[in-house]
Amino acid sequence: MKKIITLMLLLIMAVPSEGALSVDMSEYVRKDVYKVQMQNLNGNMERILQKLDSIESKVNDMSDRITGLTARVDGLDARLTETNQNLGSRIDDMKQYIYLVLVLLGIVIVLPSVQKFLDWRDSRKPLITLEDVKRLIEENNAELLKSLKS
Image (cartoon, rainbow, N blue to C red; front, side, top):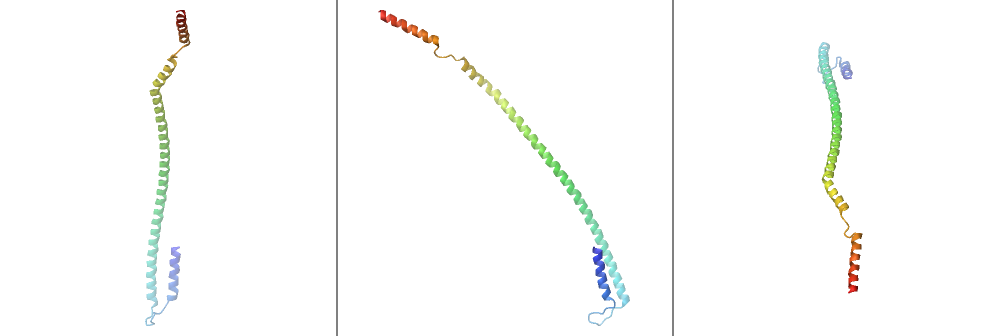
C-alpha cells in the first residue's frame, strides 16, 4: 500500500514537471538535469521504501513476539488460578480437620465431668424412703400408745 502511494506521488510529480519553468520564469530546467534529479529522487525513494519494509518486518516480528508472550502469560495465569483454587480447597480441608480435632478434644475433656454427673444422679438415694416412713409411723404409734397407757 505504501509503495503504491509513493509511486502515485512520483507519477503525479513527474508528468507536469517535464520541461517546466521556474516560478519567476527566469530559469529553464534542462531535460538532462531534470532526468538526473528524478533518478536521484527515485533512488532516494527506493531506499526509503526499503527502510520502511525493514521497519515493517521488525514491527511484525515484535508483534509475533508479543503474541507469544501474551499466550505464555495467559497460560501462567491459568496455572496460577488452578493452583490458587487447589490451595483454597486444601485450606478448607485443613480447617475441617482442625474443627474435627477440636471437637474430639472437647469431648475427651468434658466426658469425665458428664460421667460424674450421670453417676451422681443415678447413685443418689432419695432422702426419705417408704421404709423410713413406715418406721417413723410405727415409732410415733408406739409413743402414742405409751402416752395413752400412762
